[in-house]
Amino acid sequence: MYHFTENFNTTVAIILTLLYLYQLGYLLLGFACRKEKTECTPQKLHRFAAIISARNEENVIGSLIASLKAQNYPQELLDIYVIADNCTDQTAQVAASAGAFVYHRYNKHQIGKGYALDFLFKRLAEEGKDTYDGYFVFDADNYVDPDFVKEMNATFSSGNYAALTSYRNSKNFGANWISAGYGLWFLREARFLNAPRMKLGVNCAISGTGFLVSGDIIRENGGWPFHLLTEDIEFSVDCALKGRVIGYCEKAVIYDEQPVTFRQSWDQRLRWSKGFYQVDYHYSFPLIRNIFSGLRRGFSCYDMFMTVAPGMLLTMAAIWFNVVILGSAFFLPQRMARILIHENVSFIMETILAFYMGLLLYGALTTLSEWKKISISGWKKLLYLFTFPIFMFTYIPIAAVALVSRVEWRPIYHGASQRKLSGNRM
Image 1 (cartoon, rainbow, N blue to C red):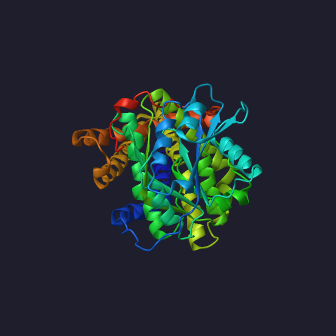
Image 2 (cartoon, rainbow, N blue to C red):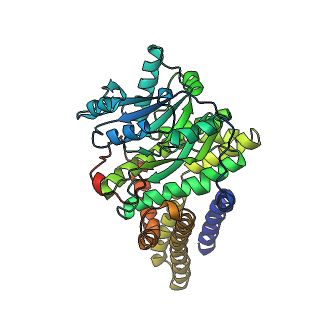
Image 3 (tube, one colour):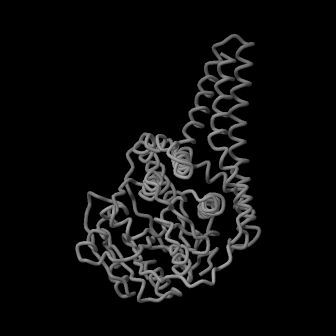
């Protein structure tokens, strides 16, 4: 029993280490990444549409539209569309007054941003308005840097990308440890995942908001056929499978409002976790098959497989296995029980400590590398550095609940602290 437990624990640790070892390369490359100099060559000015799916977002949608209207980009080349999705407040009126084209959608059965986007793209096609070079997708609580569209256009003009993702910062980074946890995670994703991917020429991943999709892709797909709870990850996986390249534009910055209550955070991350399981179920085998389909495409498929793979579940299962063995040790002879207890307790404590220290290291590296972009006091940056692993630890019960429960999309209320946001570069 002792040797079996020891071998099991060692095997799990080795497998996880080997599978995710490539991300150490991302980490090292993330430090080497430096902002590229702005090119002086003239870029083609593309015609874009900004799409905002909003449900009861009257508190914040006006600010987003105002930031889009203030872009350093020809206004005649940027149209703004709002999908008032099952709204019961003044979202549509506020959006129309701010200068957006508003489409009302009422559907209580097909709920979620994926369905709303598909609705609008099909309406535009029916009306003969699907003539845009690309479509930006935003959440209603975003604020867009004045140079966002200009910078995305410059990268898009290369013609190499089916889609682009951007640098995602937070409007309310310093509100509390929850918003800071989100903020650090998204900054880490930009600096140590998407920036290295872009350098290596492999696929980046779309993350929720602030991304650009080629109009040709929308027309080829006949709309937006991605309706899982994490439609952004589903789209990213689909691009990897089809060899469509998703790029990253570091100089295009959006600011996102993060949840500040644990209840809201729980609901949102429960949906994300369930969405990842859905993507696992539908796409794991196609991703595995395509790992050997060529260097760039194959590695992109492997990277996406590891991104959506339930690695935390394997860790949880290993811990639970050791807890069960620990309980059975009390029914064994004293000498054997002592050896098993030592092995099991050591594995559990070492796993928890390694998890905490690994996240603390990632948080520290992200905080130091993005120090000037986190606009809160120095002592708060250090404080939230130590709470970041705790925030990530709360994913463990969320992932467990998502595995066994039915999860539906729920709205996240925005704008309650709009007048006292911290960590704000607006």
